[in-house]
Length: 228
Ligand SMILES: C[S@@+](CC[C@H](N)C(=O)[O-])C[C@H]1O[C@@H](n2cnc3c(N)ncnc32)[C@H](O)[C@@H]1O
Image 1: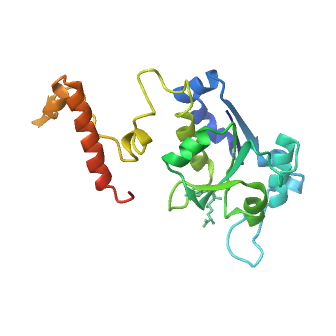
Image 2 (image 1 turned 120 degrees about the vertical axis):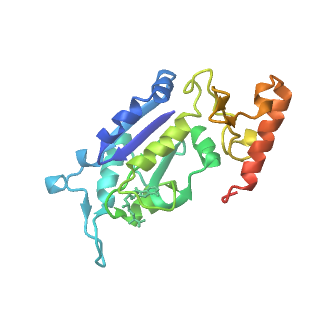
């Protein structure tokens, strides 16, 4: 898989790139690229945004600036994106990122993530260059970088070779294996702490009963989940 992120702040991703699961995925063939909109703008002073038509606060990321950046990277008209690439704008009003969407994106060969800043994107960027609009929640961040990292992190964890052999993305909160419910509780040593004890079943060594208890706990949490 290839993931390209377009941003005004590529340096924001250096911590993310250094994470072990990301490095593992890169070792297994993942390609990560970062493109700064400023590197290809031809406007004087490397300008990338402008004031909104109709007035109002803030600056809007320009459609021509985003076209130049996409053309420079892919050598083609961004209004005609190739079918093998999902071009995703991170935007608060987009489709909510959930495990089903993460699964869908993890199966794609290539993703392009567009980060906005300031007041956001000129609407024509979303209409003509993007296949998807994705939101990470009903709140507003200062920029798309954290949202892009959230999306990329969730997708990369699903790629073969990303997680160590003792970890698994199969039986986790909201996965199909748990019927879309949150994960069951975990405990580790000490078995007794300040009078707070671990459920007996987990200490029983009885794998079938442990598995059944975990399913029940997961379902119970799902019934109490306000979003399910
Ligand atoms: C300050 S926000 C713009 C908010 C926009 N004016 C609005 O009210 O919807 C700047 C950028 O941050 C990113 N962003 C902010 N909140 C987000 C969220 N919840 N999900 C995804 N991206 C978000 C988007 O890329 C957005 O263009």
